[in-house]
Picture 1 (tube, rainbow, N blue to C red):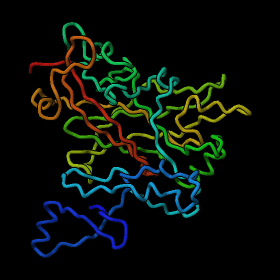
Picture 2 (tube, rainbow, N blue to C red):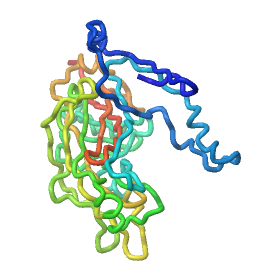
Picture 3 (tube, rainbow, N blue to C red):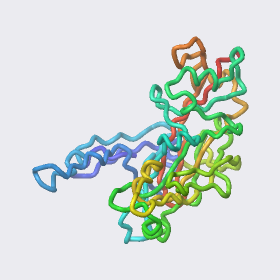
Length: 340
């Protein structure tokens, strides 16, 4: 459902699901729940420098065209509006992927700039003497820095995600972390990870004892020697074919040294940090060539070499259980091109 016009009378455009139409025909259709979202709004358009006055600061936002209702079965709100029990919150957390050079050197990966995806390589598939990751490393811009290995495989590669208050108005010290996050219930001890179960069979996350903190040399160090598998899942209520799995959220201990806040070198969050998690994924072992042909592409080049690949693109949603902040991760499931 969507607003078609926001001037004068409120006009709604609604598309019913198959179940909704059936109940409408039977005369027992009624709305008992609804959710609101603002997917089409770019709040970066809020312009406090507009010389016409405060009434014009949000003019561009108010004039943003509104999306029509979606008819697809798997359409959903990606950025839903949320409610908080407390009415004294001065700041709300955000969720960001950390792709800084310090974290990448410790195992974090980043987007491939050519296709804007993270690669998830099926290393059981070979072309000649090279497995998928070895072939792909030579073909893409970031090399291994954009590649996860399916089922983790003991390789310390992961997507690193942080939550916190991304503002320069507050120092990232432990006092602010406690005041603005921990004591008001805005810290995530768990993250839900929603994946298309046709393609992803497992999620790997941080084990007990993992830590992200400053060492004696005032350098940010991630203590994460391994990941742990999570395969228990529940069916997503929002997305067709998606299942939900959970991984641990670890409270960040990345606090600034006295008189020298250099922690922004190591973190994607500027202000007080909340929790972090590290993610890798397992590819569904039952995927066949026909699945790659149906849902993705086969025998495709990814670079200048003659190597070709089969791949499927999918989106993984990472959500803080306590904060409800959401991050979308574009994943390209990829293997060396196969004939069967």
